[in-house]
Length: 454
Image (cartoon, rainbow, N blue to C red):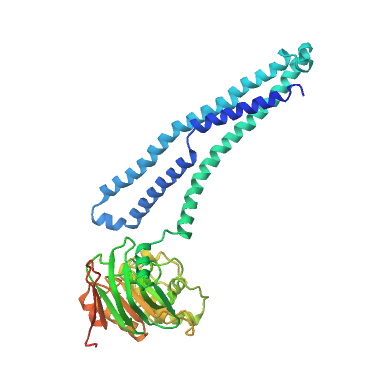
């Protein structure tokens, strides 16, 4: 009432000027936060990689190069933080002066104005009235300045949050709206009258490829006009030079890569089981790990079924007497225990261990076969989620040849259609056909019978 409408409006005008100056002079905190998160993510990834491969680094005496890589990653975070700190200091200084100190000067000027201009008869007021007016106006304008300063602080926090939100948004956008692959090649196939087509056969192990072209995402042709039919129970080994894309066919089947041209006929994706050359052991009890990704309750019948699977996978052996603590323990089949490191009594179905440490690399590969056998011979036996096709990608490198042959024989007894990707010549004796990639620009291939197949 005593300041008039001009007083608050002029103060708001100053805050608008301060906001304009801040928008030009202050750094973009969202972008800085996004850069910081990117650098920290790379540092954590490299640290986790060293932790995972610590033994191989020690074997190859690679400590110094790894330390250099890790320190370089850390130094980038440090340099970024050191470059951000002066900007934050400048930002805080500008905001404090613009929204607090200069705003106070503007507030004092607005407080004096009614007395000097005799607004609302303030020029004739007594000194006591002027002092009371000054105190009340000062507290009002100071509270307004502090509120605006809080808004500026909130702007910085929102800016930082926006940088983190941008990274999350980019992740979801790339997941829900991935960039289309091989659009030109697919359109060319449609123009030639050979559009891509996918046919899903339920409860069938049949695989058929009719005039199928397989391309890498970068456009390189891997297979040209693939025409083969794989019946239930057939075993095919895929051969070719390193880097020729031997696993590309299965990426197309699972939809990781698009079909460029031709017709692909295959079972449902859950009827395919992949054993990769990288050992993967889930987290959980022995029972939970064997039935992964299914979730089944505890029962005596299930445990009996799983011990049979472990025996098929050559995971169970006889007990050795007088074991010392920390020795590899070999466990009696009848007692139904599993050989593990550092556990003298062996492992039971209810034990939850760090299986990557408890099992040797060769055991982990046999363990993967145990999960394959359970998926092909599930419990209960009438389960509709049954594996019909197994893809074995260099997954037997740590397994003895006699055990390897027995594992492939078990696949045959279970009626599995087997695709093996391997350089082992001796594995050809466990297969019926060979699909050979020539790895040339024409994408040529051969489908050859083995063991007298016609």
